[in-house]
Length: 99
Image 1 (cartoon, rainbow, N blue to C red):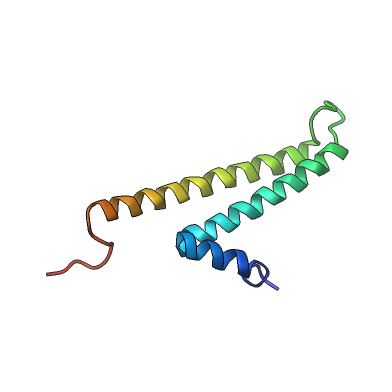
Image 2: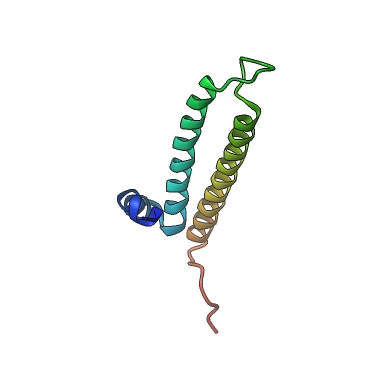
C-alpha cells in the first residue's frame, strides 16, 4: 500500500482546502512531524554515550535531516502561497499568454 492509499482522507481534505500542490506538501509535513516525534521518543532511550543528555549521533543526524526537510517543505508552501496571492492581486491567473 502506498502513501496515496494510506493517507487518502488527509490528502483529499488538504488538497481541497489548499490545492493539490500545497495539500500534498501539508500532508508530507504532517508525516515528517509524526516521524520526528517518534524518533525523538526513541532518542530518549538511545542516549549518546558521550553526552547522555543528547540522543545517539545517528539519531541526531536523522533528526537534523528531517528538520531540514520540514524547513524546505515549509518554504515551498510559502512560495506557492505568495505566487497565488500575487496572481490574484494582479487579477490574472497563470496560464498561456493570449494574443
